[in-house]
Length: 270
Image (cartoon, rainbow, N blue to C red; front, side, top):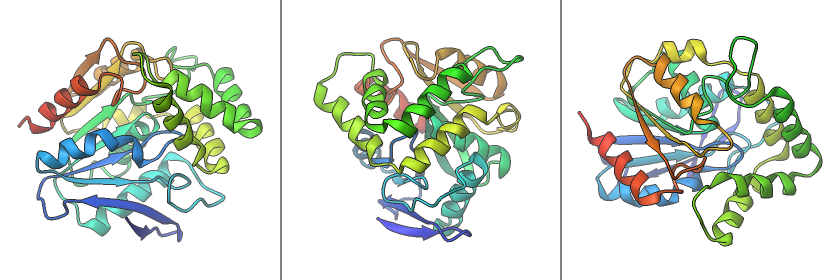
């Protein structure tokens, strides 16, 4: 691990495995977790010869946790800083949940700079919440309830989240691990990124995605409903939808072997 400093003097923790490989993938985690969620993909990708880069978003994991801001523009700017500092060209970009929303904003804000292929993993896009002209996702009142819980009883929020993350039967130990990862986040970042999830709109960003895009989503997702994956498929021109019928939100773990095989096969296409 090492740090890359942004233009607002925030240190972003970056993990760069197999840096000599010419085939790179950058994986962005979701709310309210950190880069450790990709533990069970890293070895597979390394064995396939990839340079595997992960980062902790500001406020999460080992990155600095400033007072703010935590909007998608700022976090997309952080990704751009990492991409430029590492000199990444023609790389694969992947994001899970809120991370999928943030990489979508990166694609719109920076015109997909350096990205040759995009992967959206249970992505909270194009919106996480419903509006008058977008009847998909969570209600604003439900997300406000989650934000309020983050402000008053974050351990309970983390426990609730870990129980909802997975659909297939798994050990209580793995659920506790996910809860512990979420508790390692900054409380301020958890609240403010919760507000970003509630308020941000990526409909225009999705229209600007011009690279092949894999959409990976579970039909049993209780956090980011499968209907959002259908919206992504509709709005991204060159996209392929991979549906997992026994997966909830934890798309990278619920059907671990099936996901890894499907994910790797898509990465190798073309």
